[in-house]
Image (cartoon, rainbow, N blue to C red; front, top):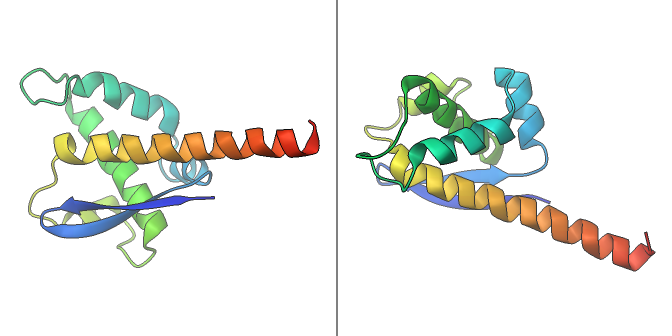
Length: 125
């Protein structure tokens, strides 16, 4: 099961998709663990303000890669590289988009967990 949510970026409604395939797709494309990267970004962004965040260039690149993978998963017609995709926008604020991506990912993980619990209850496992 997957979840899709549209997030406004630079005045455009951009669909993002979270599913069980995302960690694998992310790992295959970037050779990184999306769970660790999301946790790192969540800590670095702090209370979601530019004044107190600890974001460096590498963190920004991680965020862009995660956003790209989730957007590409929702719409296979977007460009084949994060750079080409990002070039479609004038502005792309991590402070506006990251919390929504984290929320979407959290809803997806909760949904998968609930489905497993329900299956276990039905089957007695």
